[in-house]
Each structure stands twice: as structure tokens, then as C-alpha cells.
Length: 137
Image (cartoon, rainbow, N blue to C red; front, top):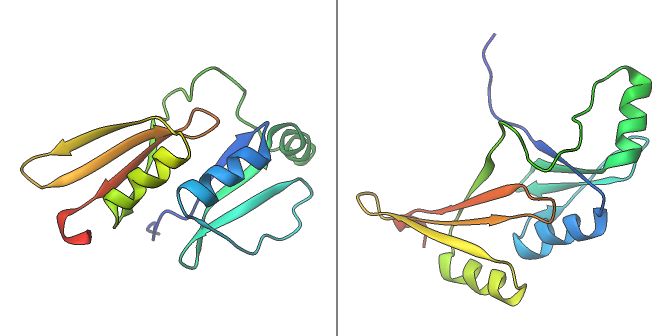
């Protein structure tokens, strides 16, 4: 058996509204179908892939514990997990979106490749890396 692709990541949050708005309105992911899973949340899509799942921390924990599924404990850090990366195609447009939303970010360039990067945190402290390759605009 071989892995085929990365499917999604889950962000647990105490502020579902702010987290949802950040990924939808600032980063541009699209709302999409999410079945009733027994706890509040949202699925955000990149194309036809629901790449980001968001869930309210306490209700998700109760739901998962009832099923015997362990849940990540809250902490001030993401531990060994450092960041999630996306590829984009409008570097200047993303900078404008981040500035309008008053989101702090850091720029990085990788000279030999022409890659431009933006690093920022979501409302829960999850680091996001945005990659813009020269041929993508």
C-alpha cells in the first residue's frame, strides 16, 4: 500500500468564527460540504479537496473521547508540528489581503529559485507558509 496524497489537516479552536473567517476571507479557501459530524466545525476547500477541517475544541474532544479516539491536548505550542504550506499565484495580492486584515507576516526569498514566501500565524498560533513560485505570478 502506498500513500496517494495529503488530504486535510484539522485545526482545533476555541474561536470557530475567527478561525473560519481567517482561512476563508484572508487566505481564500472556499466553504464546502461538511456532513453532520456531531460537533461544530467547517470544511474549507482548495479546488475540490476539503484540505482544512476546523472544529471547536471542547465539543470535538467530547465527541472523540466518546468514540475512544485520543485528542491532542492544548498547549502553548504546536509541539513537533511546525507549519502548513500552500502554493499561491498572486504574491502582491496576498500581501494586500494580509495588510487589509492587519495580519502580521514575514517575507522570505530563496534567491536561486526565485521562490517568494510569506509566513504568518492563524488565530490559533498555527504557522502558515505561503509559497509563490516565479512562473505562478
